[in-house]
Structures are given as structure tokens and as C-alpha cells.
Image (cartoon, rainbow, N blue to C red):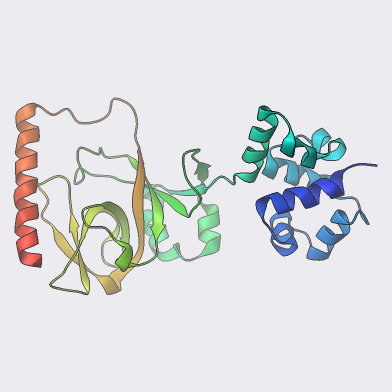
Length: 250
């Protein structure tokens, strides 16, 4: 007799899922999870393969090993258990060609499901999205870079001068530094890293989504080359803009 039912119950509890949550992930009825765990029924092959894919284990181990015994085992066994518990954060990727569609489909689960996804091992649990940016307004971050952002729930969670991907009705998808406008409570100020671009305000009512930049992905050897004088000029211009802006806001 296999250990499938016992291991299924152990793995579910390892992640802290209810039978209903586990059933949704395996695309079966909740009652079937109960039947499997109580060994009143044997999981179908496709269900077992999905379980093995989620927890990164072999079908042989799932069927014939008692996975719960590894809790007090060797260091490698404990590391394996930790990997099974860790659920990778899946990142949906919005390339430039999908940006227009994203503006209308950002709240549509079916549209989001059609986007390509990837994972990054360094991401903590959370909700993430990646956006391709085009243009030179955020130099030295080059055009074509991919900004991986973590979902920001509300404007009150914004931190001044941090970079964000902001989705708004009038501006679409943009990547900027953001400052809260103390003088105009219903607006946020968008600032480019390239001082050639003037800051501008966006109405809070127009903001649909905000993603805090946590990682920037870019191709090697494609960044702009700056000399010392160019960099010094950029820094001075940016400092002047920020000082002027702070005076206006206060």
C-alpha cells in the first residue's frame, strides 16, 4: 500500500493550507482531498504528478516514502523540507507591447493569466509584477530594462523618493520616483531620474495600481556611458529640482 494519502495530508499541513485551498490548487473537489487523506481513495496519476510538481519531489518518494520522517533527519533532509514549504512568488511580466492591453485588463484575471510568468529565488512572499520600460527618462536605468515591483495597497504606503511603477488612467504605465504632495493632498508628484524631464503631478483619483520597484533586470553592457562631468551635471540638476519641488510642496 502506498503512502500517498498520508503524504498528501502531511504536505498540505506543511504549507498551512485547508483542504478547500489544496483542492483548488489541485483542481479537484474538497471531498476528494478528504477521501485521499483518509485513504478511502487513491489519488489519480495526474493529481499525484501535480502534487509532486508543487512540492518538487519525485513520484516514487511521494508513493513509497514517509515524508514526515524527514523532520528529524539529516541537514540535507531538513533543507529539502524547507524548500517544500517555500512557495515561490510568481511574477507576471508586462512587456511594452502588452502595456496598452494591461491598462484595460489589469483587473481581469483572464488577461493576467495570459501574461508570461517567471520566478526569482530572492523574492519574499508577496504579490509581484514585472514591467518593461522604454525611454530615457529614468537614466541611468536604460531603456528596455524590466522593473520587478511589489504591489502597494494604497497611496498612504508610498515612501518619498522611492521608485515605483504607476498605472494611471491618463499616463498609462510609467516608472518614476514618487513624492507625496503635501500642498495638494489629492495628487502625487512624479520625478524622472533624468533631469531633462520636468516633474509633473498625477491625481490620486487617476491612479489604478502602484508597484514598488524591488529589482531591476537589464541586459549586460547596454547601460549608457557617462563621463564625470555629465554625472556631476545630472546630480546638480536633480538636486536643484528636488529642492525647488520641496519648497513648493511645503
